[in-house]
Structures are given as structure tokens and as C-alpha cells.
Image (cartoon, rainbow, N blue to C red; front, side):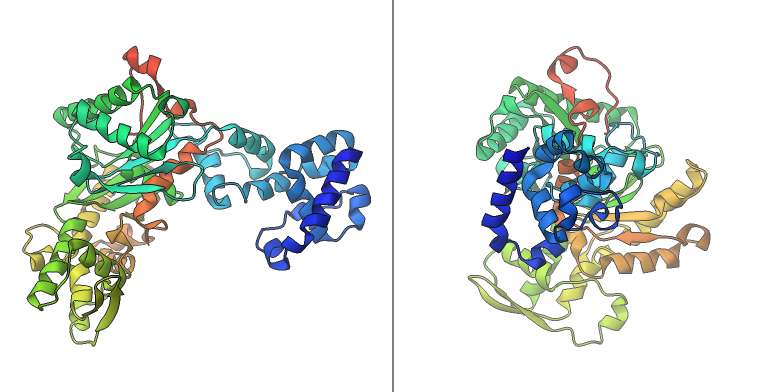
Length: 473
């Protein structure tokens, strides 16, 4: 113990200048340090910021060792709040860690941990999370795919899926194997060393036998391609469910504005309610961006590529709270696109996003987003799957186009106008916290779970035995 404490004090002395008061304040202080009546022996005489530095420098393992040889440290080490403090600085935000460890740690089907927080051992959870090897995360979309490491904050790479790999929603073994082999090569990861969490777009929406067979065929093709590459374990979950997890929910309606279509997906306890019905509208991000391109061409605004239009959509466009009123306002604004100069847009800024609510202005014969969501909510209400309707009144937006300012507020307003108060009261529309990366973040949370891979994954031997699995498809 003397050697350990000597090491601690040397570390404090050497690094004291690197710790500013702001860095100490930026991390939530465990309540045990300031409110607990337990004595820390000689450490009670130290200023609180020095104790924090000692705890931070000692780390969880040595803190546990100190509790063995130093009786006064035992109350501190056994206090959940100390380990919450460590978890706050470990890969994911504390809110997301608490959500996944209390809702997803038992695997699928989801079982919420009902015991109070004081009955959870965060010391054990921390120890388990440290031992989790990490996973390769692949969010494969029809338009773009994101890939990276579960221990990282965001994807390490992105690529245009369709342009580079073709339609990965088609269950073609060679195409899928090329897709995954390319990603592993770019990540420079040994295939056999880590499990993988795969996100794929929602497809074959119906609850018919034909749609179920198509989903099974695609699932089998993915597993076969990955296991033939010698991947040790595979977890495959659709984008909508992962976006819901990223929003720290297990039930709700996910509005996924995809590359080609927008899907309105009811999810209860992590399971897609296909019997209730998944609504699909034929307007996606590609149509929204294409409509802005058409408006720019009509106004003789020259640009180099669709990427320029996409950049302007992300930085200048928004959804009007009242479309008709917005037509009479001065909405002109400019943005500089690197390498191409300044672009000025006016009514194009809000007309672009209006396509989601009025597809007819872009020449598309389809119901609007508000109508698709209202129809889904009405079906959920009629199905009476739970004692109350609270589960489907949380609406989570997903996808890059879903980040348009004003979209969540406009959708909520429209739903109140379309639905009776018995259904519309309590509606909450949540904007994507992680933008286009929502599904990737949801997969990352699973990959960092203390119980991962656990029951979330299928192993090669299990798949080869052709067992029946209950997966979150």
C-alpha cells in the first residue's frame, strides 16, 4: 500500500498543473465525496479536488485493491456513486450507460430491470464493461453506410453504399461478402478477433408469409457471408430499432427518413409490431435533395455536383411551422460551399422540407409524413396492445434529413390537428440526437454492453445447427 500511495502522490505532484478547476468541475462529483459521513481516514484532511485527482489517477482496479488493505477506503469503494463516477468517463455518456444497463443487458426480448438503482452493482457493471472486447459496428444503409469501432465516439468511415457495392438489401452472397470484406479491410481489423453488430435498413415491410420469407433469406445471406469470413459472432438488428435505442427508448414510433423511402415503424419493447402495420411513404432523402436541385436549376443557380446541393440542404433548409405564412416572409440566406463559393437561397429553404408534408409539390403522388404517422398511431390505438397508449406517443425521428430544423415541431403540430385528443394528448416528437448516425450509435451502445455479446449475438456453431432464433428483426 505504501508503494501505491507513493505512486499516487507522485502522480498528483507531476500532473497538478495539468488539472484546472474547469476540468474538475466538468465531471460530476460523486456524492460520496461531499455528502457521505463515512471517514476516509487521513484522506479526510485533503481538499476535495485533490481526492478527485487521486481517485482519477488510481483508477478502478487500484481503488478496489486499496479497499482491501485500507479499511477507511472500503465504504468509498463499495459506494455505487464512485463507480458511476468512473462510468461517466468511459466511452459513452452516463445517461446512455444507465439506459442500456437497465433495459438491454438481459438481451432480447427486452426485460426492464425493475429494481431500484441502489440494488444495481455498478462496480460489477464497470468491471464487466472493461472486459467487453468491443465490436465492429456496421450501419448499412441503401444510400450510405457507416462503420467503426464500438469504443469510438463516432463512425471512423463512411461510403456511398449503392454506388460502391450495389443493392445490399438484395440477398446476394457475393455482394454481401464483398461489402463486409471491404469494410474490415478499411478498418484494418482481424475478422476472427471481434463480434460484429450489423444494422440494415428496414425492408420487406409486411407481415405476410412472403415478406417473412424474404427477411429470413436476407438474414441467412448476411450470416453466411460473415461466418464464412470467420466472424465469431453476429448481432443483426434493423435501423429503426437501433435509432430507438439511441434515443434511450425501447417503445415508440420511429420515423426513419431513408435514402429512397420514409418508414413509420411502431416498436413495442424492442420488437417491430408488423401486425399493427409499418407505414411507408414514397419520399426519402434522395427526393428531398432532388427537389432542391430542381429549384436551383429553375433559378439558374449553377453547382458542380449533388454533393453541393446536399450541403446546402443541410445548412440552409428548414421546415416552416406554417407553410402558407412563410411564403410571404423574407427568408433569404447565404452559405459558402468550400471550393464553389457562396450560394443564396430564399423560398427554396423551406419549400424543400415541405415535400415531406406535401409530396405533390414535387410531383409525387403519396400521402404526407403527418398522414403516415397519424395512420400508424391510429392503428396502434386500435390494436390495444397495452393497458394504455403511452408506448406509441413517443415519436423518434431518424436519418440525416430528419435533422432539418423545425421538422419535429411541425410534425407534432400537424398530428394534433389530425388526431382526436384521446390519441394526440401526450405526443412527443424527438429530433435525432446523433443526426444521420443514430442507428450506428444504437448499435454501438449494444456493442459496449456489460453482457455483450451474450444473448444478443448468434455464433457460428449455432447458425450451422440451423436453430430457430428470436432476433430483433
